[in-house]
Image (cartoon, rainbow over all chains, first blue to last red; front, side):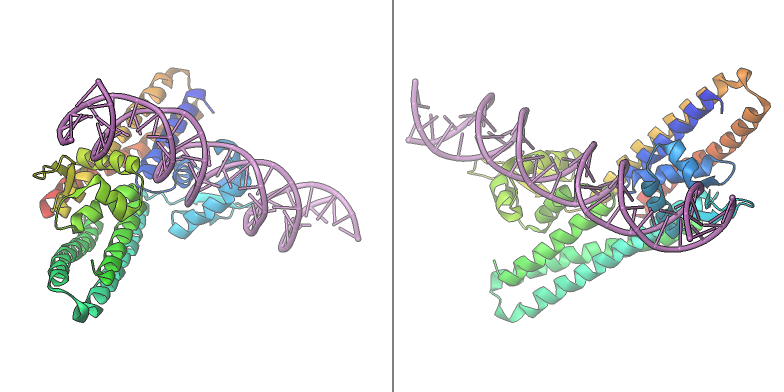
Length: 164
Length: 164
DNA sequence: ATCGTTGTTTAAAACGTTCTAAACGATTAT
DNA sequence: ATAATCGTTTAGAACGTTTTAAACAACGAT
């Protein structure tokens, strides 16, 4: 391959990695996807080892993660008994899917936290001083705001899905 | 303070930390904000050391980061020469601000990458084989998609700001 | 002037995460 | 059957990030 093309590709892969990383997504996984995305043909594990200069184990592990995300699939190449991998060409879909599942998961955790919080302060109400009760009131108001935000985030997410 | 209230508070703080962390935001900074957010009065560095069981230096460093984000401000407490800190009570604003600046920064980096990419493949065009030229064409199409996504993300961000 | 209080800086330690190398198991070719 | 080819697993190494402890600087009180 032409040298400058390879440089351009590397820039792309590097940049996608950094972008993902800054949003809490594993840098290497993103790079792996980027390489497959740019490639005009499916790549084998060996080829990925070569292009990314990473260990077989590392690639194997993270390719499976990408498969779980639905971002990459295993394709059959006639005449070879190697596994070949192909990126889903619809980047938007991949990103939105990941974003949605991530947001859903986190919002679920926020819900749990809110429940636990309510239980804890509720169960203690009887043994409280007046001062404590004031604190509880203030906590509840603040928690309500968080809950509102959670609902808004969920709504925004489904809006985004239609928009994208 | 009542024991169960403290437990509830800790649950909250822990949860906010995890939430932030999973979106690439420093866990401790988020926890720091959470403690200040729940508090009905400004807290001093010493009090934060006590509540979070962390070192003075750590708190000092990360409080300044929160100040930079505009999420926390230094307030004067009559009769004390300590610094006291107060969380901006508008969580939405804080979150959206952070999100916006983060997205802006990253989208800027994507723009830079796209420019570099274009330059590299452009400058090499003359010395290319037919095969290379085909590759370039495919790269350019894929890059175009990324660019579209970048623009959409930027637009979505400003939409979100109005929505929130 | 000296001491005590307060916040900041920094070098090194601690920590969690990611990566690798090597062993392994499974499968196919000879 | 044996050897070669592949992908997976895993224990430990490597790495970057975060945290700490201690020294420090700034400031006010005595």
